[in-house]
Amino acid sequence: MSPRQPFRQMSGPAAHRARARPPLRVLLAIGTGGALGALARYGIERRWPVAPGEFPWPTLGINVSGSLVLGILVSLVIERWPPTRYVRPFAAIGICGGYTTWSTFMTEAALLVRDDRAGRAAVYLAVSPVAGLVATYGGIGLARLWPGESRGGPHEASRTG
Figure (cartoon, rainbow, N blue to C red):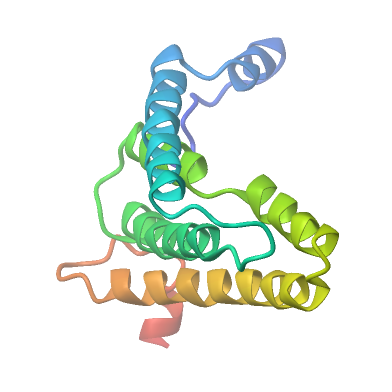
C-alpha cells in the first residue's frame, strides 16, 4: 500500500468504517511523535521565555523551523524514500504537528495587542506566515537536492518537460 492510500480499496460501509478509524499503530505513531514535538517546543519556550510586550522570537523560530523540517520531510517521503505507513504520521503529523503551534502564535499576537504593542503584533502576524511559507519551500528545495533517484513525485513532470 502506498503512503497516499493507507487503506485497502473498499466500497460501501466497510470503506466508511476503515476511513473513520485509522489503525491503532498509526495513531500511536502520531501520538508518540506529537509528544516528542510538544516536549521540544516546551523546552525551547522554557529556555527562552518571552516577557510581556516583547516580540515572541521563540515561537517564530519554532514555527519557521518546523515549516522547514516539514517541507524537507514531506518531500522526501513523497518523492525519495520508499513507501512506509508510519514515517509521515510519526514525523510530519506527530513531531512537526506537536512542535509547531498556531494557537500560541495567535495568543501571543493577541497579548501583544493587549499590551499596547499593536505594531509589534502586526509585524508578527505578517512575518510568521510569510517566513513559514518561505521555509517550507526552502525545505522542499533542499530535499530535492537529496542524492538518489526520485520515485516520480509531483515535481517530476516539471523537471523532465
